[in-house]
Image (cartoon, rainbow, N blue to C red):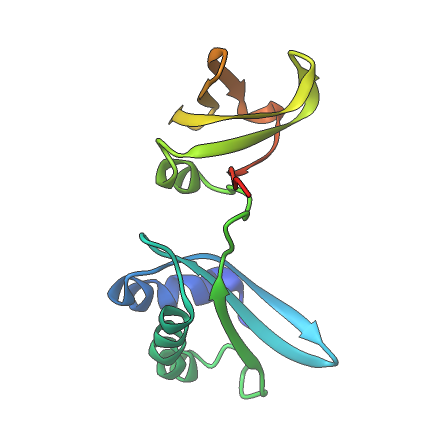
Amino acid sequence: MKVKPIEEIVSYLAPVAEEVGVEIVEAKWTQRKGECALDLFIDANGGVDMNLCEKFHRAVDAPLDELDPTFGAPYTLNCSSSGLDRPFKTERDYARHLGEAVEIHLYAAEDGKKVHTGKLLSFDGETATLQTDKGEKSFPREKIAKACLFIDI
């Protein structure tokens, strides 16, 4: 099925997301049981719950009809939380979580381990710095396999 590029859709919906108080952090086209689906993942200060997902879904419904991302073909729209354990993908993800406990997963072990946990002190686009139980530790972006919130269960 022919669909419009994700970048075009996200750009078109960004003002609607801002009005609702959310950020579209990921968007993708998927195929499920032969049907096309547009999956929009959102985040917001204070978190995302079902009510906010529903509010965003309703807000983007009419603009998506105007944009016609599938050129008239049917599709399913899914709006959901990006999830607590979603990997940081952009500089904005790092900035959003400054001062919070995060996990840095490395490609190769450093100081005898591949996973380092601590408070995210800074991220300058190239290096993430954590306050760990052993002091400040910096990790170059090219060595980071995954960075995400630390979830203490």
